[in-house]
Image (cartoon, rainbow, N blue to C red):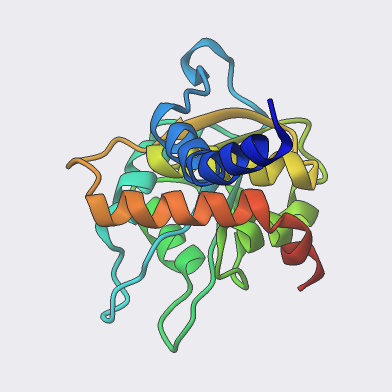
Length: 192
């Protein structure tokens, strides 16, 4: 194949790779979590807090899933806030306590505002953990796994929250773009 032809094919293939790989990862990620035993720590990643300091649907789904997984292990609740509302971690804690979970098991990380920060800021809280189970929505788990691996966090089960409605196209598009950003710009993210 001539160099010019190879170059043109490379130019044409790049968008399919850059956008196709994240779409594939987000849509077809399967951690096989059902076949593994529970880890000694559980982490629940935050989601949006509404203006009245109540959880949005995704946070409720994550907490409803986590309630059934918690026995006596350490539970890290990760999520800060970008405004004057309660942190995501605080709202998740309130929900878990309302559901009968022992408050002494809960450890809060309240500074993060992104998936990368959720895991980065929670890493010191996970030092005592041999392995970590993580709960988030299904479309988010591929990015959680990639980020945990790159930060050296030993994941065990990546558990999808039980969704009450299908993922919207807007939510999926946002996740495709976020996955592509994490995949391609990791070095820049670590510096900044």
